[in-house]
Length: 305
Image (tube, rainbow, N blue to C red):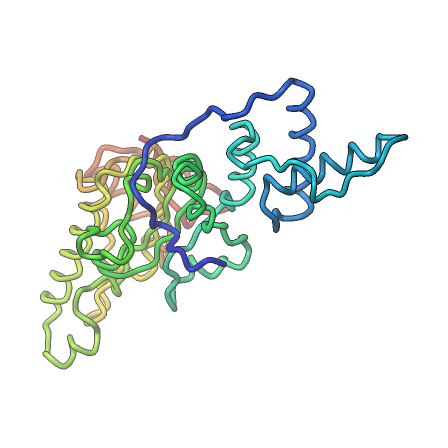
C-alpha cells in the first residue's frame, strides 16, 4: 500500500473523457471484455495498458492457424491513456472505490473497527500522472464514505493546507466528498486530558474549549456539499464531570455551522431516554421532524432535509 495520504493531491481540473486513440467498435468490445476479466481476476497487479495488449495478443495467437508466432514482447503496447475513457473509469472504480475509507484511525473509536472489512484504495494511481489524477480523484472522493476519527480541527484532513503543508487537501476533496462519518468526542478538545487535571481546569473551562473546538471544525466543513453525514455521540461528554453534551453538538450541526446534507444519521446514544430526548429537542428547537423509529435500529435518529 502506498504511503500516499488518502486526502492528498495536487490541484487540477475535472475528468477528461476523451481518449487519444480511436478504436473500431469491434476493438472496443474486445478491450472491454479484457478489462472486465483483468479487474475481476488479477487485481491489476501489472500496468493496465501492457496487460491489455498482451491479453489481446494472446487471443490473436490462439486464433491463428498458420504463420510464424510472434513473441509477446514484440507486440505493440497500448498506452493506458490511449484506452477509451469508459475503460479507464472502470479501472479507476476497481482500484479506488472500496465503500469506506479511514484516513486517520485512532484508538478507542468504535467506528473505525470495521476497516479490515474494506479493501485499501490504491491511491498510488494518483502519482501516475496529472491526467490520471484529474480523472480518478473525483471518483475516489465522491463514491467512498470517509470515516474521520476524533481530534481537534487542526488534525482533520480538510484543515488549512498552510497549517498542514505536508499533507495539503486539494479542492477535489471539498468539491467531491459526498458521504462522511464524524464524531463529537471529548478527545476533540485542544487541551489534553492530563493537562486539564494538572492545570486544575473547572468543568466550565473544559466544556467551553471542547465546544469551541467543535465550532471551529464545523466551520471548516461548511464548504462540503454532502449527501450523507453520519454523526456519533458516543464520546460526547465532558471528561471532568461526565455531563453529556449532545445538545451543544446539535446546535453546531443544525444552526448553520455545517452545510446541511441531504440526509443526517445520528448514532452513539447511551440510552433510549437519550434518544427520545434528542428527538424531541430536534422537533421543538429546529422544526425538523426526524423519520419514524426503525424497529430494527431504535438507537439512531435519521433526518432528511
